[in-house]
Length: 256
Image 1 (cartoon, rainbow, N blue to C red):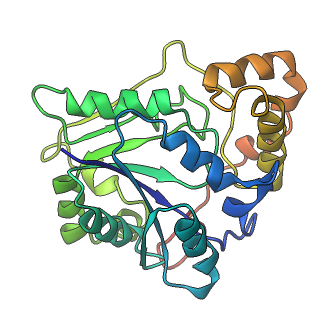
Image 2 (cartoon, helix red, strand yellow; image 1 turned 180 degrees about the vertical axis):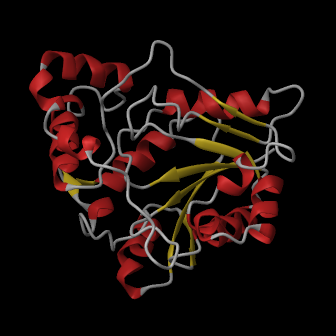
């Protein structure tokens, strides 16, 4: 059983252009994420999945410099990107990650993967996202490649193609799914990078923790923010904004 983490990454974010390669302490945010995913015990390979647009050539260059396999595909049909990357890598299990999460915790990813691998009867999909019990930015979705390919072949809605996994978890009659809740819950925090305020918070966290402990985890971040409660307010306004609404074509205006 080969487990492949596929990270979707692109440069053309409208709210924070080039965010995935913005640097902190001389390292791109994507570099921190790759470093952390490489510490996952359950992940056998990391693949970057970007678009065929010339604007995403820097992502391809990053992959080459860091010894990562790359898959390039449709900007809007992210599901097809994942299917192509999974097939190229020979994945049995796929971990879906987004490149705007440089504080991703290997421990939490391993919990999600292990839950799927050890499930009896077998699960098709496990996620720690969507429960509101973890800060945005610690999300991981794990699925069997067979479920991913079924979604790729059968999904027709724009949201299903753009967000990769809805076809799976919206068909519980076909796919056995489970969502993991963090206990105790960690509420009211946002550690993903989508807007300038997010980048400012993540920059402060990395600059404070990385030099003395490059392998810091989510508990270290929580302790740091407990010591600096004003930092949590930096991107509080972003977290409070309503989620984006589909445009007239039935698509969301932004995807990683």
